[in-house]
Amino acid sequence: MTSRMANPSKHAAKLAGLLYLILIPVGFFGLAYVPSLLVVPGDMATTMRNIVASESLFRLSMVSAFLMNIISIVIVLLLYRLFKPTGKNMATFMVVFLVIGVCISMLNEVNYFAALVLSSTDSVAVFTAEQTQYLVHLFLDMREYGSYIATIFWGLWLFPLGYLLLKSNSLLPKIIGVSLIIACIGYVIDSFVLFLAPHYLIPLADYTFIGEVLFTLWLLIKGADIEAWKKPALEFA
Image (cartoon, rainbow, N blue to C red):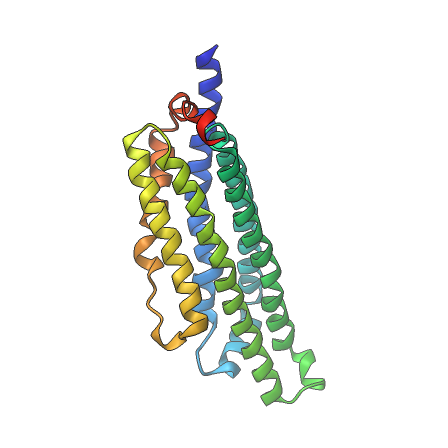
């Protein structure tokens, strides 16, 4: 009976790892790759022409952001199922933080849609070229700042996840748990520094995200020792 209970949980862990692995290129495509191709800093006229000329690519970047958020919800629900026996309260915080980030991120794509609409020729009848360029620049900036607000919660959800790993009985998850908490700190600091002192921004998350990579690989390769995680359940539930 124990092995029956453990096997589905191990499969759930591997599925969460696979989805996490898919999440990385999907998110990178929409949040970083497409903007790097189409947005020309300091030249909104060229940026608008790029958006109109590559409208399908621009829309695909928005769709990829939606897919990233949907996949994230599935991942956190799988992880909640795995970690609930270890600590129900912390597992709940994990879900809440991530869902808040998802909501902000999904709504944030409205700024991209506004930039797309304003870049079309229809806006010329309402605004001057300078006004249109200013508004497109504004909405693109709003999307970037909105992403950093979402990043606060993308970071915060890693703290309870790391905490739960620290409370497990396996040495490897404890190491990964520490790295996830460090990743959390990196995301949160990056976001607050952007708003408080943007000229001094040091992208810590570019170096601290390694914890997420290790966690993903561990889920894919090792799966989950669910029986070991269940032992402290009474203490932390």
